[in-house]
Length: 384
Ligand code: GAF
Image 1 (cartoon, rainbow, N blue to C red):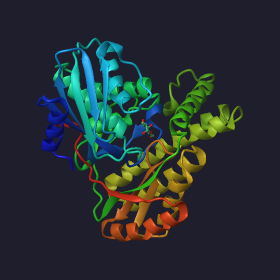
Image 2: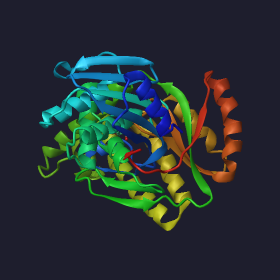
Image 3: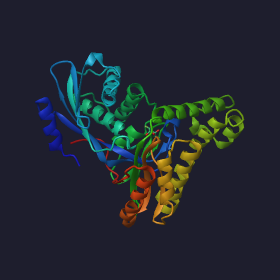
């Protein structure tokens, strides 16, 4: 855990002044409901006890001066000159600045320090956490009077415009809006939501990080989104009332998409079925039926891997391997895919033994370290 004092001390050392504010914005997990957010469907995420920390202070001039602890690097730019840069990390902050200015926010120069303990590239949304931390910090620094959901939306748009990923709203919403001990059931069409206790009894959520991120992740993500939109267009030719895959049934897809394009059909069908799985999973969670919840997770993985094709050998291996243990009720890849973590519903007392068993087997097969992460559902973005 990174402390407020540590962040304050580093800011002071790097910029020579005290920070005005320090913000902590968490990474997230998602129980079920993958690739549904940009199709106006449902998701079931929550924030975790790993976060991005941002410290900010105003400057006298119109410069933006950033420092990222992970990269031990400064980045400087005049506020009027910002644009996407090749160096990845500044984009998540500059993209937020850009969105704020598009909304007419009067920003001056500022210093901003970033640290964090969300593993990068693990599918835990470190980028969304950084966008939300930056948005929240600039909101208080320049007294912009933005609400939490605005900050999430700004983060999402920053990702589209400065990071080039046409993501949905799930990650930013989870980072900003989560409540400890709960998951958020979010309707991505109108952003209505409810908190559901993540009551797992003797079971816990364990993440297994493949420590791989295959390079096609961003382009494949945008391709999947385009396939879903193409499917909606085909359905609209027959039913103009349809706005998104949220309004679409398997029957519509069978009639109007399958005869034209089987790949688009398979992708769209996955999304429709994933929303149905989320419904069943929510009901199971409410009824304390963890076997059923786990089953829905396994089925989601099957769909993500075979139909939506966003998994990879490492993720498939981890999900298959845990199926032999009755103490593991469910597992699936989590997030955009092509690497990152699996999320596992595991008997709490079995977690360490599972880690002990699976780590050497994974290493032997892929020559890679496996990192196990025990997560605690936590509160969203806050000032420290
Ligand atoms: C990534 C995106 F950022 C989210 O919006 C979501 O689509 C997710 O992949 C897949 O469910 O994390």
